[in-house]
View 1 (cartoon, rainbow, N blue to C red):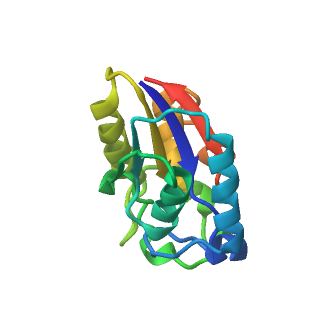
View 2: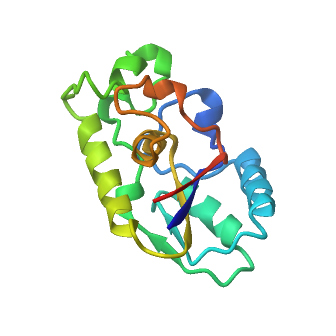
Length: 176
């Protein structure tokens, strides 16, 4: 199975450097334009399905990329951004951002989702696709790319995951 992963376009909180987590924020004008540019880059790609996080910023990006194409869009909660609990709305400078994304630290926060729980749910999604034929587009979030990168073999869980984050509307293709 060929997978093309796309991070959602920019939101106002991305622009302001705030952690979004599961706060449901729409794309801003830049994000809409980024999604259109990604759609143009993918116009000749054939996808059997588009899977997306149900959060608005990812779903909007998926809809823009799929516009004018007869491709089903499936919302899947396993593709939702990591729940950042007490860190949502904060700048990455306001807390230990690197420790938050350190798989080996395995910190249990008061409210934020544990990183290993994030990896487990994302791995579960891709395990269901593994071995199937075809090509799919997956539209999700920057934090979800950490387990995607590891699952694809592009990085290891033990790597500094903050070094591999995709930019808004950037894509990554791999096969499973």
